[in-house]
Image (tube, rainbow, N blue to C red; front, side):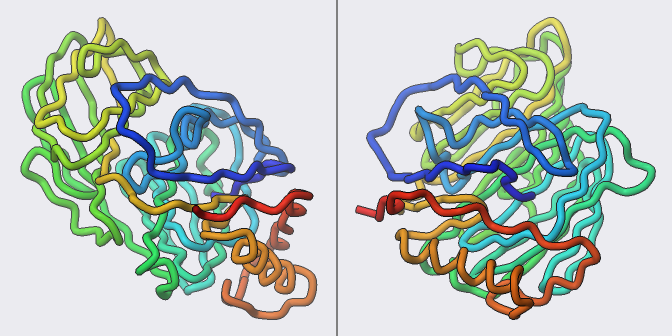
Length: 316
């Protein structure tokens, strides 16, 4: 998915001192263009930029809308698409063509550069899901682009149904490879259920609440909140409210690298991000094939916004 903000802000992400549990409320971000929908963004936020390598969380729907996102670029990250309702067709410049369906994960690794489009299928009028980004570490961010699809089986425990799409939880392990250790799982809790999950104490965790409300490690979280939990915990206690709960559990060890994230690019310096943008614009304006590969799409590509007047801050 592309960031369609007309004036995307620079995000400088650094590892900082460990914090306690945080409740991150979403902010509404209207996305223009033919997609014309509003998403609830919780990461990055003013209080937190990263949870493990997870660096971007957009939560949307249910909306009666049509998604039509033309070819756009990515570098230095992997996109993770997870739907609750609807169906989206994915095409990318590395030759991958797949459908995004509820309960099935699509992970696209941009590496040194990729472009892709996302269009909801003709029979899909309601969209509801999450678009997530993962920052790639320095040793992997210049690799060739790639794509993996996986449909995890349901894991059931009393009061709980889970689908583990990345990493390991509840004795189930996803086969999807990642550049850093990650956890990604959809959790469905019965109303009033109390669930204790064994988790990796070396991981930070984030719990994005889709529907319902619950207490997470003793903290109250409402629908659409993102709950941050620091490293050190061996178990995670979840207590659902009076209604069933659906949530996404994300996790990973602290990333340990500083990144600069602007528009659809993740780099390390202003000059690097400016070069990513220049390559894309050469492709958009002159049809010159660059790091992003052949576009191969009927829709015209999305031009990059102008860079800010000031230099993007470099990694320190």
